Structure formats: C-alpha cells, structure tokens
Amino acid sequence: MACDGSSHLSCASHCCLKHGCKYGYDCCPVATGEIVQEYDCPYCPKPESVQEIKDTITAAINEGYRLYGAFTEGSGIVDLIYQRLDEAGAINVETWEY
Image: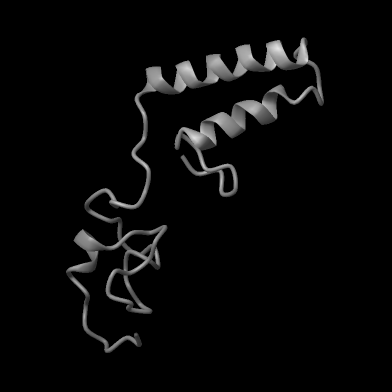
C-alpha cells in the first residue's frame, strides 16, 4: 500500500522489522527501520535462555565429536553447531541474526 503522508502510529505496536508491515504500508516506520517495534513479533522465534543456548552448543559439540572424531578445520563440527543453533531458533544462519 502506498504511503499517504500520515504517520502510522499503530505500526510501532503491530509491525516487525523482519516480517514487515502488518498493514502493508510501503513506508512503515518499523519495516524501514526508522523506529523500533514496541512488542515481540508473534512470528519470530523467541530467544532462548542463555543456559538453553549453552546446552544446545554443548550437545552439538558432543555430537560433532561423536560423528567426526576431532575438532579440526573442515571436520563439520562448526557447521553442525550453527545448524543446531538455527534449528533451536537461537540464530538465523542465513542472516546471522539472533
């Protein structure tokens, strides 16, 4: 939807930087990064607690050792860690956002 010049006050509480404007405005101040969204987006994964992320990393390292036997360059362990973090919703490996 094209901008009509008015300020979109409801965007701050309903729109998401990642998912865009809930109302379809091209000039949504949240979607364009002009303002920060006020609430968590219901479609974005919730960040895990620090302990859950540590547990995810530890489990991925242990699985990597079991599968690859060593923590050497190209062994696949680092890729496995990133894959597990991505699956857990702790990090998006395509955009590197967490």
